[in-house]
Image (cartoon, rainbow over all chains, first blue to last red; front, side, top):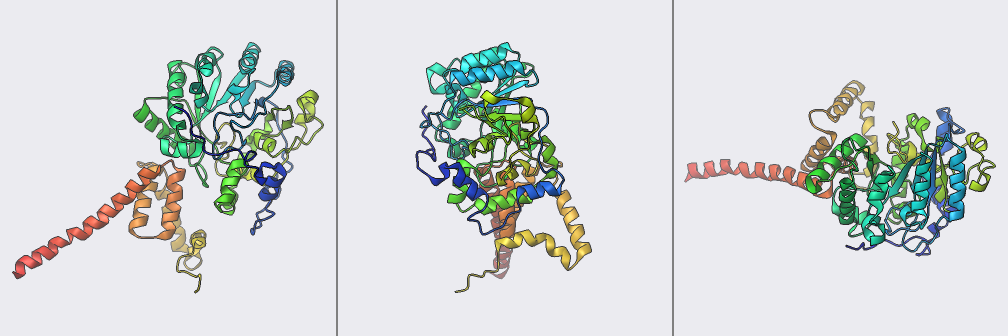
Length: 354
Length: 111
């Protein structure tokens, strides 16, 4: 069945929040009655400022903002109306970087729906030939959305791609509320197809991880407990399996920020993030071993800084000027949104940190 | 009209301050309370649902806010949370009705 879109992109709504500069003003509390402690000050107090990076190991590429879904909390502001797509020329530069840097062992492909990039399969095959570990952040529904994507489960299995998929809840009601009517049903069908290829099945080595993010202004609970409940409910109700559940905290940017502001929940949510600040998460933050590449080739400390257009604070700011030494010597660009990654058990593209 | 009410949601954050007037007992309470809500024979999720039901029965607005959040964080859905409240309500309603046996006994003795 088709998907009834949950919302429109901020860009197509001509929202002020479509402008990263305006978002930064909101996040940095320009209009807030409360004076939240600056993230940098908290880091300094625990002796972690400036935040330095460790070895660069993961190359995360945003293949484009185009998506077949338009989820209420999308931090990319992706959707069917977004046309930004990484070009073949930029992808070739990325391949060159990956070839020259064996220390980068993992390629993490995201979007939008990364599969909608017309060069997607060629790029995955090229990375596989180099022996890189490939992760694809798939929204699942793309697999069943159009016959031209039906090849994906078999293609993923052939290249041992690790599939990471958002499924905010094990029930249709809460999933569809966040991601659009019909998304849950299509997601279950897609997981069935992946399971048939061996994904999530014991001893297959084909990894299917689900991403849980809270469906409102609250923090995720214990990742292992949530995983146990998801496994129990999805097996019982739909006879489907997966490997791990990655619990990710929503960061107050783009459409989630829009939701928080529109529902008068922004200060309440920031209070929760600050109250849960946990310095033990800092060593494991993803910005310390990952570099994030935008669809147009610019370099960022993470996917969230990319959305806020906070480029790397070093001479290497574009794939054309990629210099691993400069990148490994840089300090991470910080902001109040960083509290999202340090709250509670911490949050990264790989789930909780501690 | 005054906008002050007996219950201020902000007071939930002050719960820890009850040790100010009786530190020893307060500390013992929080140690016990934290132990109760740890994963045990019951999961944290199950304990949160029980707490949510009890919060409604004892009609504590702070507890309702706190355990609605905790239930959602631990992966409960709306249907499960409402069923938990129904369980609490059924016990409370049932307990009231169970007292009617005393009324019936009394009526039968009198007439």
